[in-house]
Image (tube, rainbow, N blue to C red; front, side, top):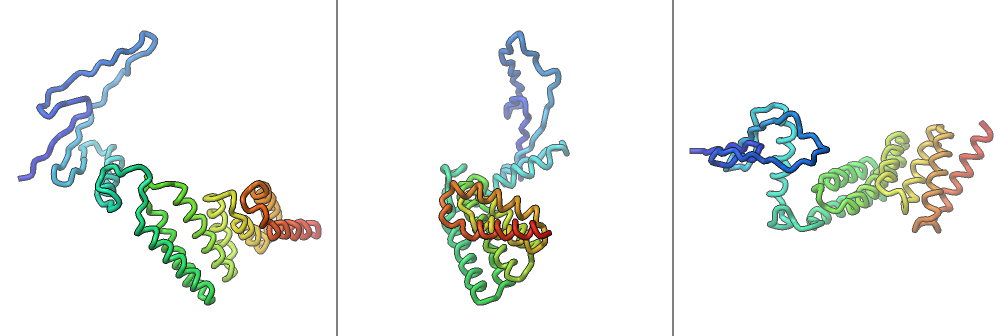
Length: 232
């Protein structure tokens, strides 16, 4: 027979004996004028929380989802896991998908390469929120950049422009290729003013970055765009 435990926000004990919590409030502060009692029910089997209050449904759904995610982790038996855990299996799978995408790109199979990059992007995006954000941003920047290049090879300029922009948003400095790719896409779409401004920003960011020695392509693109603007 299943037994449920009702948890009442307001420091109510399991014996349903309510404890009044009255903090010391300075005279200059006013106590809240209202008190909301929220009944929560805990399922002892699944540890899921539910409530009769429909306004809590979305929040409890997210909380229960996060709890299940913690339980499913295979990186550590601790809940929550130790700081900055990284699932090595996921990293290996992402790397394999990216390398397969690169191989397809080199063979000229651009749609297939795009599909493989998309799978890798989904896997990287699904990393648990507590994993190092720097790792996720680095992975996504490279993967979106790869997919942008595959789209450019198919002359899918709008799609490539979006992916290149996301790549740069994930990593603004040390990403000359990302700045260059979107600049080319904007140029090919005839959006000269946007292209000029985009490349100008890219040069500003990258001139002080680790890839400042590799700015020749971006600088050449800037000159090409300015020359085209002068003739229009």
